[in-house]
Length: 161
Image (cartoon, rainbow, N blue to C red; front, side, top):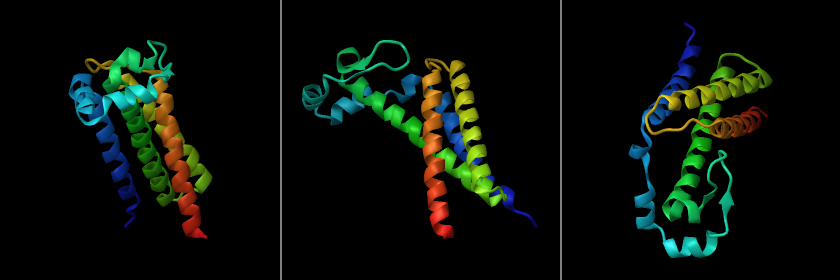
C-alpha cells in the first residue's frame, strides 16, 4: 500500500496552525504590555532609539512611534512570520521528496506552495477583525519559506552523500 500521502499530514496540520493564528484578531495577540513587563525599557530606548524602519508604507516602525513594547513586538511578529513559513517550506519540501519528486522540482514546487499560501493567508486576514493584510508580509513569509526549503535541501543533500 502506498503511504506517501502520510507525509502531507504535517504540512496540512501546519497550514491549519497558520490559518488559526491568522483568524485571531490582533487584540488577542497583542504582546506589548507583557513585553514591557519583562524588558528593560530604558536599555532599549538608550540603545535602539535611532532605529526606524519603513514597513508597509505607513508610519515608520520606531520606539518614538510605537513605544518600546510595540517596537519589540514588531520584530517578534515578523520573526514569527518568517519562522512559521520557514517550517511550512521545509515540511512541504520533504513531503514532495517523499512523493518521488527530484530535488529541484521539490524545491520549486515547495516554494510555489509557500508563496501561494502566504498570499492566501494575507487575503484571509482581510476578513479577520482588527487585522491588516500586507503584501510585505507575504514577501516576508515567502522568504522564510525559501530559507526553510534551502536549509532542508542542504541537510537532505548532506544526508544523501
